[in-house]
Length: 149
Image (cartoon, rainbow, N blue to C red; front, side, top):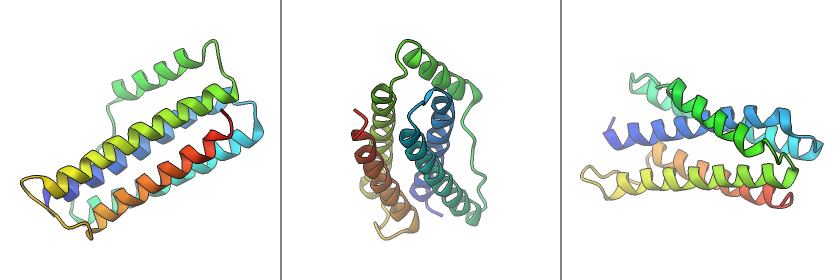
């Protein structure tokens, strides 16, 4: 497998796992049932993307790397601080939108590096397509969260 493929799969895996962790940290603070349902739907989507990325890495005999515990702890601490004084549906939706936006940036950067870097790959590769699907998913998540702002 080309290095760009591996890097794209790793980025999808990382983004999806952090998305799941972030939602799990936010869910106890959510009182709006519809927002909770939308967040669970998003979390389930992240689980699917993480599994698909892990399978892509596994096919190349590469083990998916879990995020460092310190980074997960820092993200959860940030969420706790962000929601300490405001856990309204609007504020939680804003945090979700920010997270999806950050994922779009990191995934798109990974795709650009893969298609314009020293080792170039086709946009038709499974890893590139998975990245594109995740970007589409994140855009849908942003649209879904906008109604809570």
